[in-house]
Image 1: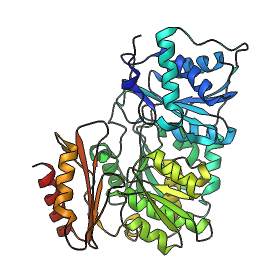
Image 2: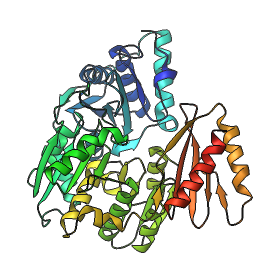
Image 3: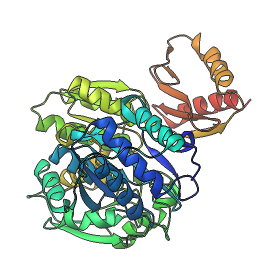
Image 4: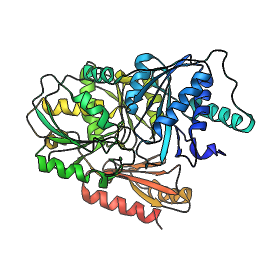
Length: 454
């Protein structure tokens, strides 16, 4: 096929429509290029439940083996299960998934041994250039000896590793509703939760990459409506929603209310700091709540603020030796999980925290959710730079205002802050506002949006 790789090779992964933008023949070339760039003698490959995933991951494995690498195929898995295999086996890995994208999409998330990320600056550009060269001028030269392709099931080992990191042995029984969204949570949750004092109410656990019930993206409020209703109907202690490849987890309390990922970040940070003797670095991106650095400091830790995006979080995790990192998007990263993100481990921390005291989840998280937030508000604009400059000009000269441009424009005072960031892929500006009270939040939000949308 005549492929335009600029359309499918993104900053952190490969992603596009199958077969229009890419297919098995291209996946095979990516497998060959991955081995060339990593220099790996062996790799591990896994895939999600999308209809195209088995064929694409199989082609990738053949391409890698033709370059002399031995391939371990772990079959159906969540993205964090692939990271586990990469870390445990100390092998570079490739996960076939398009996360929460619609059914016709698929993609590849790649990592080096120990789940270290592969992005544009860490090998993905070289992989793309190799594939483009082969598309222009013939197939890659095979190795003298073809590698082997073997199957291995890692689900039990993955579950055991997660449960070794959180003590759930003495928690009170909890009733938990889990919405897997027909994604990989339906594969991992039954094994991870097995043997725990949990009354599990499963929703949409059937693996179905056409997503017949709702998009597997729990950050969009419309996709957790079913879960919220079910939590109330069951009188459950909490609800958990996983995205398509089950690396992100969203939490709903006993009232059916969504719990802010910032509050989850703060709660898990406090627990991880306690596990690590009351000290350590915790990474948070710049649009998580003020609550996060406050809680980290209160529990003896050092908060470090980063740009938005998993490559920046993972870089800072490695650079600082951080024990934990969290994002507003419900990605949670753990030192004890090779600095990779795992929503499942965050979920186990929430279960352990809730089950080791008698109060409801809403009461427990109140201590970690101290301010009023707007959530992300998107505005379509003709000129991102000009509108951002207008907002900066309006606020920068005000008394007691600080301005920084670590990632977009962040403006802060003692009572509120906002961040305005351009989308990399669409003509959008994304606004997040937080304040000490709802009236202040509304005032600042409306002032900024008036300037953005002028």
